Length: 455
Image (cartoon, rainbow, N blue to C red):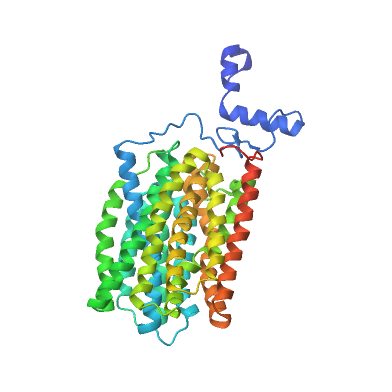
């Protein structure tokens, strides 16, 4: 042990200013009741973090561009193409299953396949986010890519309802969720000023998938068997995900410490935002699943009902890019509130549609604004996270909670549709969106009570 009288005053000051010493002094001051630490701070580790401050630590720099950053955006967008882009094409599967393979099942039975897939996408993010933060991207992207391609190949030979639930729903959902989380988390390590725009480009990959994959499925189903149609998707994904495996690379040191970060739930803005996202996702996917069947009831052809899915996803492409660019200028939380308000209104308008032309117009507008809702979620989440190294875990925990909404939302809407008609299903979807928007409003004004401010 070093004697106190052998240490110079300068050395003593240095020791007292180490992170551990500062934390111990802060805790002692708190216990004595004479601390000058502001309420709302988290003490410990190597810094004192204001739980409501959204600015990243000063020592972290962001390239906000460059070859490596944009290659990462490309790889992450491909990951979104193969994960949520594939889910966005589920309306084609639903129509085909109801009319050909699973004719003895109801709409809400079929909806469970897609809902389980969505639930496991979000649920697996709970673990994928922490694995990404602690060990990096490739350790999770490579095995997830293999599992996704395998699940698609197995789906191509399925015949029974339970087989589709297991292969397309569970296996597909787990692998897609494990691809989604690192694709979103890694962008926050490369971009700050243009973060919403970069994330909009990444999430637009799912829109591109939602345009291309339904058309590809519809054309192949007319020309070949169901098995070879689905296997063609598998071969396409195998090549694309190889690019993702080489381009999505983290740039910050891995996070140490616990697997999860329970201190996130001490941040009120995070809690309110997660609650709002839960209700929004509870209602958001109903139009994706049931607009094609609604079109059939209006007398539209089967092929045209499938093209509606492509129209929806095609308009969501600019809907995911343009609001992201504006959000970096006008405030990410501000734009995040506008998008679900408009989307909720459009869902309620769906109830009044009686013609094919009206449905096409509604689908186009819904596609644009629903795309904004999906793309702005990770950008706002990145603004709440105290440190970029924790982004995967924060997003993963939010996704895990939202998995319950993804699991139950469309089946509830399907059950209401079967028993009471489209009015009940649309009312459920629109109400969920409205409640979620109210939570986001509270989160926005808790974060900054001023009305006209960029936040």
